[in-house]
Length: 128
Image (cartoon, rainbow, N blue to C red; front, side, top):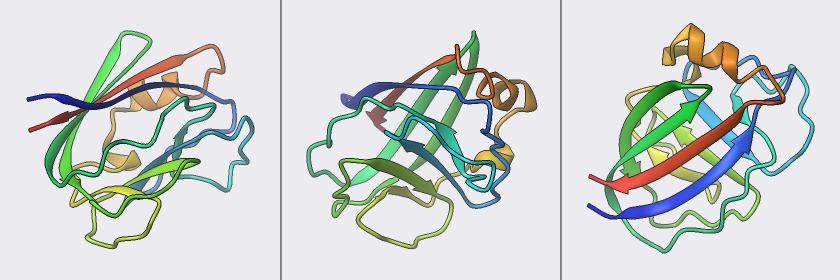
């Protein structure tokens, strides 16, 4: 199992993390409460190499951890945002589909950590 992508993001006071089907990391520095799928801003990811297959997404924020399983989209092609979906819908900004968690499935304690602009979110995407 190798690390496909590793990056950090920050929390933001407008993060609600309530979406039932997706979660997203963006390089934007500001988000509005309307973006209820966003869980991290100021993401410093590089585009991962083109791969497919199962992955595990490990996230840590303020000592809280979450793990999400899914499948890579080999056609991912976004340098600005990463979207993880429970569905099988593919788009260039969708990194992972058939995920076993969305925003709503993350623990409330974890989601609350994401509302603090001082929170640093560490993300690792690993081949399963």
